[in-house]
Image (cartoon, rainbow, N blue to C red; front, side, top):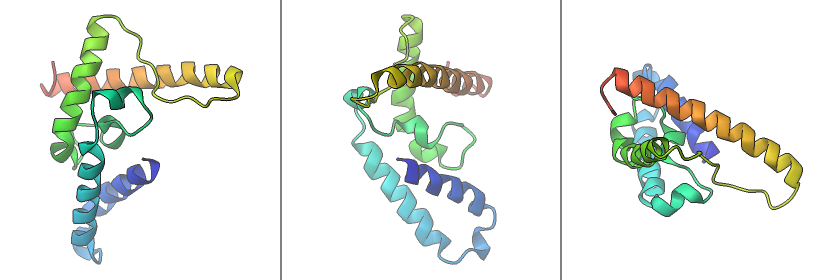
Amino acid sequence: MHEQKCFIDAYEWLHEIRKDVRNFAKFDESLKTTLIDILNNFSKESLKTYGPPPLSFCDMSRARLFSLLKPYIDFQMEKIKHELENKEKRDINFSWGQYEQAYEIARRNWQGILAVKYSRFLSLSKARNTYS
């Protein structure tokens, strides 16, 4: 998941100079195929297990890969909207199985990080009339 995000960041940065980048078309095709393969395994259960949710790959509707990932992001956004409407707390989808005291601190921190990230995405999306 983390490596893929790095490739996505590189894609975003290199896209503007793609004509000067050797094999960019091959990189483009390979990245898109890999992302779709990963996200095709994404399901409702995946939101509760460790793995890459769609917004971990593309969290801004202006990102170049947004249209490719939009169906998967739509699925995740519906889940997030449901949680917000029902005042459910967004929890993380991983555990360490050790260092429980440190884990609880990290868990609370990550709950905050995700709340801000998803709230930001929703507010930017509403401004663009992407999600309501």
